[in-house]
Length: 148
Image (cartoon, rainbow, N blue to C red):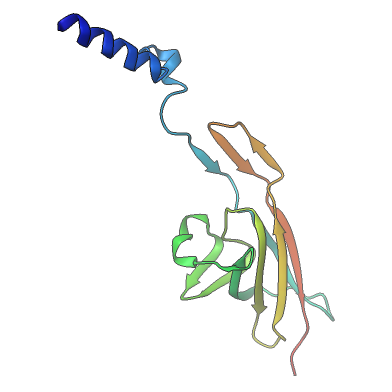
């Protein structure tokens, strides 16, 4: 009985790919994914007539690949941004998402006409397969028309 249990234990460990060595510990367990940057960054917003920078602006109606994007689940990805309800309040260098894909949203700022924007977010650098590190966001610049 004891011999059978030992054999079963040895087979279980071998089947899982682990022998208890430090070398096996490096590949066993969860795969960690890190994001050095958001998937895209709004590098700046400017006045379309004068090219003057717009320091603060808001993003609303955010969708990823056509589906509603739930902001409350994404707070860890914030850069130069805060979430207020369904709105991302942004400053230059704003970023808030780590998933690659097609984002659509409306940009607004006081004194300017709101504008619909589409961004195809893709990281420029993906290192490793497990663990994996993503960096190098897609950079977007937005021009808004002055309002009446």
